[in-house]
Image (tube, rainbow over all chains, first blue to last red; front, side, top):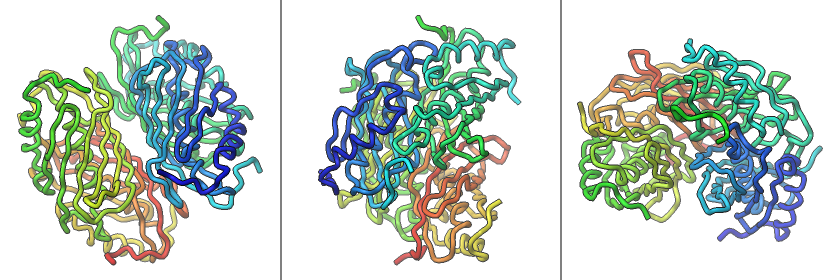
Length: 145
Length: 145
Length: 145
Length: 145
């Protein structure tokens, strides 16, 4: 549906994701990259939990946020950077399992892109759903200054 | 403004927070607890960052989410548990500094509570703002089963 | 997918919608009711517009809100009432045309239901997307007191 | 706090609001305009209600949306236009009374502005709270083409 502006989009997404130290901290991987669609996988770990042993709601937000971001980034031209403007997440059920966040572009745009992510547990349960707004910064390196 | 239903609310919040292993993972502390209001402090660490070296937007969400949650939990009766229904965060400016998330109850309720959190950097900049909905589960232990 | 708790769900939805005077004011109709899914149609009118002649963003919210609400209401038992807890809408493109809002239950629940609505223009353009949380009030009449 | 870029901001807001036919339809008025802050007043009318006689949640969204929008518009330079990117509203209590929506800029920006609105009933009850994102379109007339 969506044509990537940069033929090297998949490698560009992987390189950018690899620079996200917060994703390494929680053990998340970028396991699929297509134009306008990515998947982030998070194995269950005890140190990702809240007080009752479920994966922390903020951790659900982290992987959904990142999945939305890279779904948008995959459609961007080389040489730009993306910032998250806002996101909203509904937590549908608590989860004590490994997770995958599937991010998808709803509406690509020159300045703003709207994306959605669905988070599923490895037993198939629908854990969370996110709606997100991102803004492109043209001619801005996606690296540390 | 808000009267706590449980005189031991502060200790109950601290005990619950101490069971949140995800908060230990990122190095966050519960640094203030009042009825309907809490603060969570997060020292800057390189392993909390996204690809450009700013604190990850999902980490901002984690501390804001948790600050909203404990502001609500502080007003709850003993013996109940809280679940996060949903939250929405706007990121106002990127931050590469230590942060504090200030959570406050907007509208306490028997079933649902609405809370807000503001995230500030240690130079005073307003980094993010969150609106959150929580649901009380009466007579439910706030611990691992 | 979703089984209605009340076999007379469709008539119950139509009766409730007919009591929504705000829907009559803007000229909206409930044009389809299935279990967990409804459509609301809004013919374009000049008095529904904002300053530039597009349908007002709040009017988009009204029909999306109502579509989410009745998708949830269709699955409820007879004799209950629903309240909207919160909603979030992204406006994807401005519209100066007739619209349909398609509401669908994402996660039905005993207390809370999560629904989504997509708003389309009659030329097929995707105009807006909404995520909504609703709370059921059991044994509560859905009428004026 | 916020300095308006256009000394004639108040008249520009009033003129733009007067072109919003949807606001005339529901009987809303722009009753206060300050830099970064506006109030919109909505007298109670029976034709603004939902099935139980409360003001429709979508009508609450309309006045909160518009209040956020004009709080942002008041800080904009002359000759630009604003589009609503997204908004999220929590409904705190049902209302069967006249309302005021108070919109305030949280973070002004060259491209994006973040605003908040609080809706109160005329008995002082806090009815709803909204967080909104707006985008400026420079050199774009705020009128019908």
